[in-house]
Image 1 (cartoon, rainbow, N blue to C red):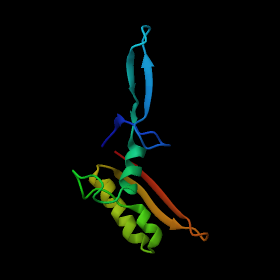
Image 2: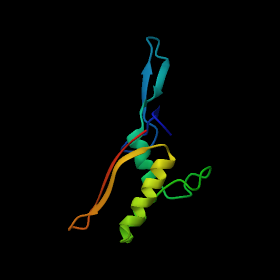
Image 3: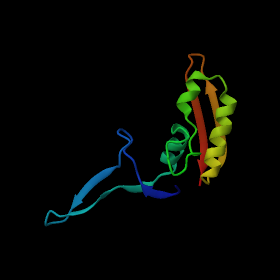
Image 4: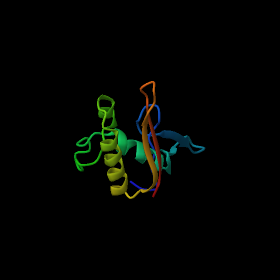
Length: 110
């Protein structure tokens, strides 16, 4: 899951497809290939462990954090998952605003 790969549509989370055709109308391309660092970070943090059957240990399950007050535990889980995927973490912070919103700041690159 590094560098350049097939991207997902940010609105539907399905494959990002932009069909291109030649002068005869035949399809010559469709899958969008681009930098996926941001996408990979989001997937690792969003997915719950066990969602990828081939690698059941992958995932943080950040949605569960909404019911928990253990931000330090989730910060540790995020760091562990990102480093296991090959990210070099420069900055990782989780803050809860006075309104109860969770703000996650991640600066990490392959």
